[in-house]
Image 1: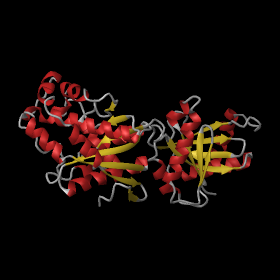
Image 2: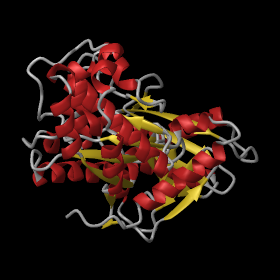
Image 3: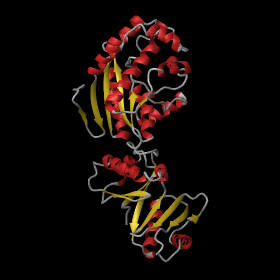
Image 4: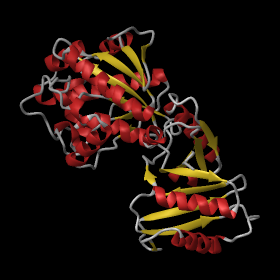
Length: 400
């Protein structure tokens, strides 16, 4: 006897209404993409959960990959047995023995198959007695057991599970639209992208590259970060913006203290134009309120003026320590701290304005025409597409 299925619990999406089928369909598609290297498995979709029939495949790497899929609340190893009392007893004992050093247990039975003769509460007692009779030194604890044996008696079969393995939660990527992530080489923006994906958003990224002030290694660092995020979103397109000429113009024409604010405004203008071209409905940034000069309330107010696109800021109320903890968890931290500067760290004024006003910004920015510069940028954007399993570039050309 051995575990032969993995049970996937949906979590939040199980609360959806008439569009629930669409969410589950997208989740199954995402799970299938995630597990494409295991061709022998079979994914079975049910109304309130999903099963993976292992067909002899090792369960450990499959479980680890499932834990990275947004929309999955938890996973369980499951044993499928016939709907007979003897087989269920045998399976429950197997599950308890497989739990290792458990000293206490609890039985929880669900009986969707009402034609099965033994009611749920009675089944708990029958199985509990059987386990106590066939083990030594193990007792029942219904409040805080070392292991909970869950038995689900369904129409097709009975599924027996022990324990529960937490997964990523959230919503399946691809169910709530698409966003354009302003991806720098720092710690914050990859975490923002990860958290946006957790809410079901498909992410594309835009990166502002300013050679020779920013190096090829700085660009590669950003591409590596994007590649890391494919673990959670499967596919990410990265749009590389040639930003040198526009950035030089900003710091040539605009007073030093306001240069950072105007630069951010132009970034949003470029990002919005690109988003419209790509059919993307929002922008996402790694801004955290009060973290740096461009992330004060006044700065955000001045910068936001140039776009009517919704700007998703998943980190806006988070502490830096919390952001770093997430970056370590998702595997982007070590790449983010590599010492290669991005365009936001060059030309930094000695005393940037932390409370810029829109009136002052217009006073300095309006006399300068950036429209042709933005048009030129959009004509020369390079794009590379990453997937979790392979890497390829599109018609804009290779970057590597």
